[in-house]
Length: 135
Image (cartoon, rainbow, N blue to C red; front, top):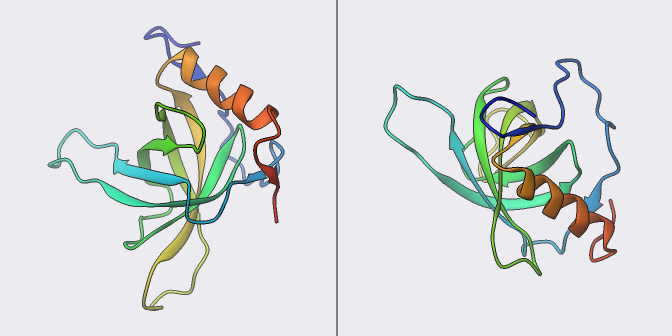
């Protein structure tokens, strides 16, 4: 836990793709809102969908690609939960070819959940059996 009460869940800068089991939410039903974590620029928010989720990160799709290494704020709207789960994260991978038209899939690792409750809610929801294993 950090001084400002955030829970650090994954503080590893290597390319460990399987730090935690992945779960597949119903396609198109897990809304994600991504905002670059910058203090200097005007706020921007991008909406898309999560394709798989774990305790260490997620794979998601947005209409606009983000930069690999970019720090972002993730707001995850999981089916079955009334409130979103928020975490800071880092984009670790762009999964589509450069120049492709249409949505871009990316992966990000969680760094710190906004509150300990957010971390607990994600842990509980993923462990509930609501989502199946990654497809």
